[in-house]
Length: 249
Ligand code: MN
Image (cartoon, rainbow, N blue to C red; front, side):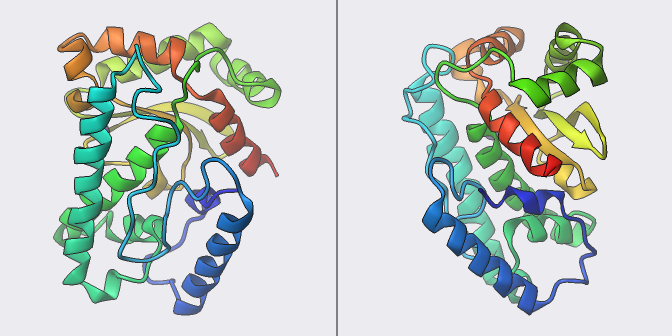
């Protein structure tokens, strides 16, 4: 129901045709008319200028685990700056300006000359995915199919939860921890800075931001406390269920 299935598509940076882009624009537009909460969460437009998507909950909706003050800065300053900086960079790069955000990320990922565009595009995408990876009164576990798959691939729920928390804790400096589908296998991975699994054809199911700006106002240096509160009270397994259902159908 959202645009996220694009994240499961892989293509070369040279294989993008304007006709495909237009088809995608039309598809996303159609989706946005019929879908409800969270749509279209990942690309407000399928081409530049990109827009900052609305948060899926009020800024104080994640308290007490994450304060409204943190969300105010994180969304209103950091995320907004990534989107604004991206649009400024693309104003000087018309060849990149009619790609979807996912296409733009994949196109620029391997090009050192485009690291600025990549960093801002990937951070714009990652943050929208992160907001959707949390919900008020979250935590718990996913439902049937995803829970069974996690138990099978990680050797039980507790083993998965421990691996996810460890990845979030041990990501050195800034970055992200993810639950992803890697082909037929679920895996926990961590990425540094702006890096995102979608550049490698992986399908993210859930992510936690472990940049200090995500937790420092509330937890200072206590990243483990942030991770614990996140997993226990914020993780949005409904969202992960939805992402998993898309790749199963
Ligand atoms: Mn962040």
